[in-house]
Length: 139
Length: 139
DNA sequence: GTGATTGCAAATCTTTTGCACTAAA
DNA sequence: TTTAGTGCAAAAGATTTGCAATCAC
Image 1 (tube, chains in turn yellow, purple, brown, red):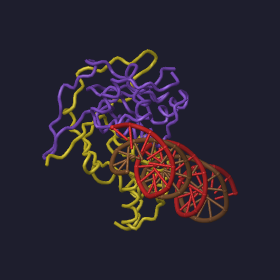
Image 2 (cartoon, chains in turn orange, blue, yellow, green):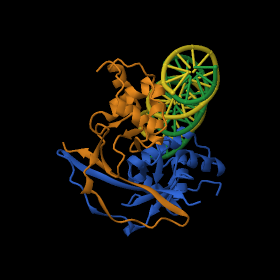
Image 3 (cartoon, helix red, strand yellow):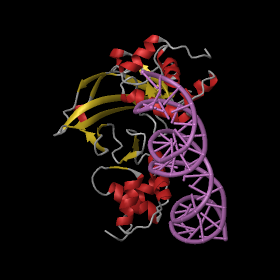
Image 4 (cartoon, rainbow over the protein chains, first blue to last red):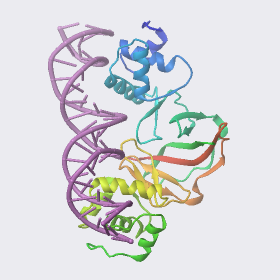
């Protein structure tokens, strides 16, 4: 996978959210959405692009991840103040965070259930609930 | 509150976790632990110190917050990739995050109950579970 | 005294931005 | 064409670090 073939369904998807299917957006979208769900950082995605011979600047990777997130194609997960993670799974779900290797993992659908959602304070509404189960390795 | 009186219970508390009760640690500890529970950023705590006429460098505030956290006196909360929050309430509890003003608020004890804790993956153990309920303002 | 702590400034790291250049429509 | 998108380098923030000066014991 070293060339950039324009897959029509990805082009559609980008167009669908009002983003021009440029060479770099297509390349990034393919890496993100072609396989199974993933959790990436800008750094990781940029590294992959380079490895695949796709020339995209780190700034463009950041911009693209933010645009994809704003468009609802990705979801940003905050687990570590040091870096941002982006999740290709935008459905309602929660995460394990492996502190040891700084890796995110989806928690299976029904494995986290909130028995009770707290009432939102006056004048506010819940926009999203994140559950993060932090893990440590057993030696 | 412009002077730094050495309250013995705070001194004890610092000594208890192996930290020398220096002028700046005492001043910061007083601001943190004297009143009711709070959620602070380094920036905020430094601002308060200055306002109270206590000269502490921002670097020392960061170092102190990290030392307090490592010692179990504080708990770090990650809700926003841009800044770290420290919570003086180290007991098991969860948070509302007001996106609009970037403010954290504790959720009352029983208002979040996990019906089911997912099984930790092979070789790992749960070290902590964070539930963050993100709020937006109703216009 | 002596070793821990602090302050400052510089370094680091992640992320954003300004602007000239390039590409999509 | 015309406007959106890109690359690069520089800027911006938050946080950490190195080291000489200072403080607690």
